[in-house]
Length: 254
Image (cartoon, rainbow, N blue to C red; front, side, top):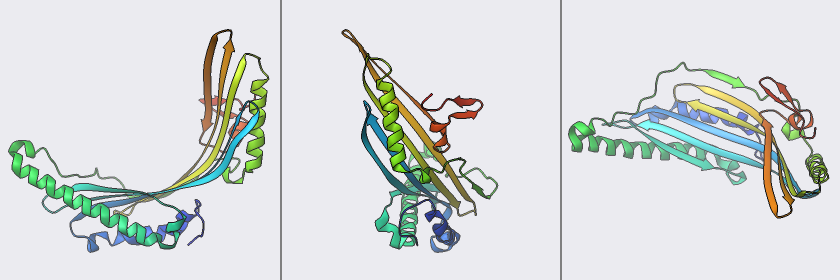
């Protein structure tokens, strides 16, 4: 298992997720369906105010979601959502298994409560139908992120310089601009969806954004305005703009 949290961690977890879901109905009685969702994000950011660097950094996000449909006298859902970190890397298969079992227990309790309500409330209780999913084709597919500049490859120092320069240029536009705040963000996210039916969807996407906020003051009147540009692409959308009709936007500094 990798020693740091990165989007490539998903590759290590695919076999564990497959094995976990493949044996679900054998290990856990009355399971109708189960799925697992994993999301890993690597991102960087920089902020500046009035031409001065304010903050910057890089971080990750790692989350897990499990859904189970189960029950004896009725079928109901149970969910679990977890935020994970580096402390979980050594024992991720166990964390996955525990999350599935917890969602299963919740589904079984919900199903029993549903069945009891059916019997208690007569015709009204009959409206509590079993939870069933619409049948769909089971697919395995990979959706790759689209970018010219990988968010992971952008030096944080370059982001700080770029963001600070934008803020300085905004401040120089007009003396009526008394305050400005500029932020930039670029990140790469990878999501894995797997189900007990055999579906396995591996999807990745980049996200890059730039925000500019200004406060203008003339006499005793002040006005605050801001705008955000962004797209599911790499750093190139801020440096070069976007020309993908109908989405067309200039570079962050035009």
